[in-house]
Length: 117
Image (cartoon, rainbow, N blue to C red; front, side, top):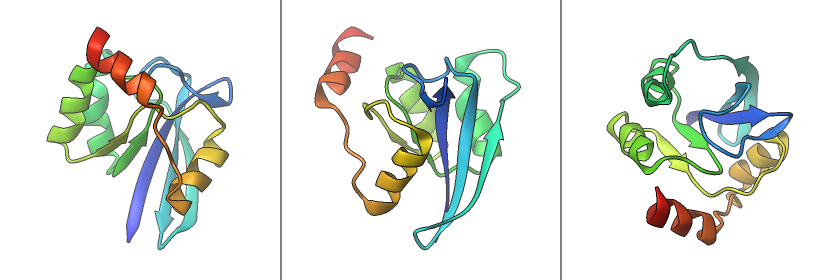
């Protein structure tokens, strides 16, 4: 099955906050193998527009550290899976963990998002 996974990147690592990044690394995978890797810079004015951009890019998944909980709902409306609370690491390490089914959320970050945002 083909998947398109976006990782927001800032200084060669997963960005601390979704939408506050230099660019997105988008991996296309099929049957657990990486087919392509591209660097994308969305031309949007507001972070709320990013789920629409993601949908237009046919993304299936987004890996992020922190995100506004309102944005999570927008991704859901576009049927895009979002992995929240992922520890900061390089995109290559994160996609490897994703493909191995070993991507783990930090529960304290998720609780913080739910309580404070």
